[in-house]
Length: 76
Image 1: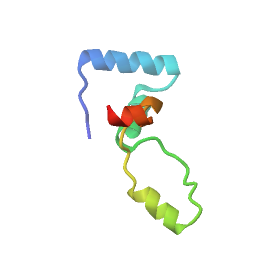
Image 2 (image 1 turned 135 degrees about the vertical axis):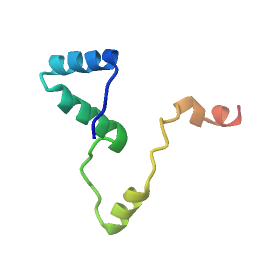
Image 3 (image 1 turned 180 degrees about the horizontal axis):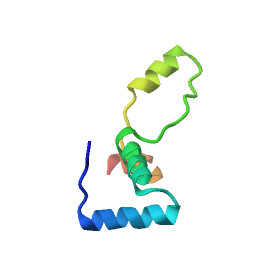
């Protein structure tokens, strides 16, 4: 697969890659992998049931604030 970058995106990729001391291609792969597949995390499951539960879990976004979970926050 070949991806053609717009000049401003290519410049940003080269600038960030040079600051990190890696090739622009390696940075692009890292960013795509993190964005599309999520960061790799070690499987810390204790048994098969927990592994299966983790495999079907879905990231639902950010966490609620303490206020949102308080009794006042629930009824507002």
